[in-house]
Length: 367
Ligand SMILES: Cc1ncc(COP(=O)(O)O)c(C=O)c1O
Image (cartoon, rainbow, N blue to C red; front, side, top):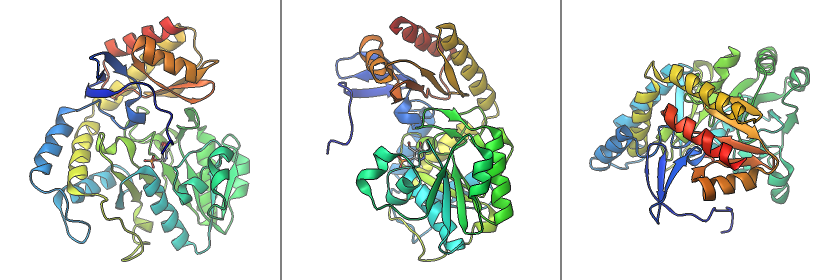
């Protein structure tokens, strides 16, 4: 179906931050499948883990135990909320799990979401994504969602009441154009949820796993959510997502409440464990911060107005889509536009300094 506006290029191979097309041309990838290839293309640890697991056991389903997802659940939990994990195949499904959990906990409860937020395309996730163009053709949506401005802590605080099941936020709004939320907004969300007995859900699908130079986006605000959702980079290119719960709400969903045939299978979980091996390296996050700074300074040096944090960066330009298309065709640099005036960069977390400088000079050449 014609749901994607595809660029006229066919990729056949990737390695690190490089891609090659079917004519042998080499590209620099500063989009990474929208942050999915978190460690670049075909990271050796991920490739080896997948190869090994594919030859051993690919699927038995969630009626039985297998080691890779058990280990992954324990590691994700230890790295975040110390509770329990539900695995999914995608980001939107991780959001669905969080929504169902929050509504089961507070029957008939409502959700407070942020304008400019994006949480996915399934009905629950779409209902949490207050964008007219994305929602309108699919009405009626799931009832009970209310959107507030992402820069108004008082409005957010006032919107949360005793019927609120959860507040859902992205610490850095990704699809909305790479907008880090002010810490006051996250503080207000936490305080309102505590006061009203609602859950705070941090959608870390795009900004989590080290992307911002902290392991989790919410750490920049010094708050702790009740639930986090993960996907994108977690599988290093393979489809796996997760909803991670704090211990207080880890047992809200019980047998029969939720499920997925494929989710959290041993092969995708083995890939994710290989990703976590790298993300846990104490040298990774300081390097992401330094490289993010280098990228920001380089873009600013080219005269651009830059937003973002760590290696989650965007700049303003008059014709974002046009510039991203020219970057691909003329400079063999993969980027994308999140809107008419914003171009987004999500390079691999292990991108080299030389590759950052190269991307900056290719962008400068386009301006
Ligand atoms: C913050 C956020 N949440 C949810 C999603 C939906 O994830 P998926 O496309 O895997 O369903 C995305 C995808 O862009 C996202 O950026």
